[in-house]
Structure formats: structure tokens, C-alpha cells
Image (cartoon, rainbow, N blue to C red; front, side, top):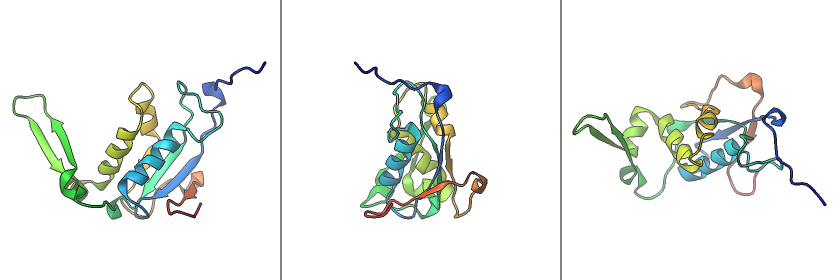
Length: 148
């Protein structure tokens, strides 16, 4: 009789991956990043242990969306004072801080539990082509169909 494997935090080996946001749409980039952050593709995946990897997303300002999403996606923030609700569309967010749009999309695709904050700390989003994590030798992942 085989025993079910359960990963221990000391056994987790974290790799570095790099995604280019200009290659595909917001949803596809965010879902791939969320999958890598949770570690669901690893054979050692255990739901209550953080088995995920580091993810670097570049070219956030070249992000693509389809349809009318630039006007229909809204970001809300409340100051906790009466009448303190502020709303911003995706188009306004892309002008102010494009990296924040990707971070919010990835956060929405992660499970809401105690591990979410640690997973989001391993997500690095940059507006340009360059990043400061070359020393970690991240593995480049392409999102186009038919390529690896």
C-alpha cells in the first residue's frame, strides 16, 4: 500500500521563471503566473504548503487586452471615510502604473488563503524589458501556442 506524499516546507526548491506580458493577453499572462506561483505544475504540489516558484513579468506597459476591457475593467479603492470610494478604469491604471494592473489580475487568480501574501511577494513585475534578477538565471517561458 502506497502512502500519499505530502511536501514539507524544507523540501521545496524554488525556481525562477520569466514571462513577457507583450506576448499575450492579460488573462493568459496572469493565469500562467498564478499557476507558477502556486506550484501546481510540480509533482510535489501540496495544497497547504507553498510549493511555488518566483515569477518575473516584463513589458507590463505593452499589455494587451481584447474587446472593451480597457473601459469596462474597474479598480476600486476606499479610504474608509464616508464617500471615500475612488474608481479607476484599466485604461487609467495603465497610464498611472501598468505593473499594478498585472499584480491585481494575478492576485485575483490565486486562492484566498494565508499563503497568498507570500506568493505575491514572489511576483516581480517590471514595466520595461530589463529587470534586476539576471543573477538568478530565470527560465524564459513563452505563452504563444506551439512554443515552450
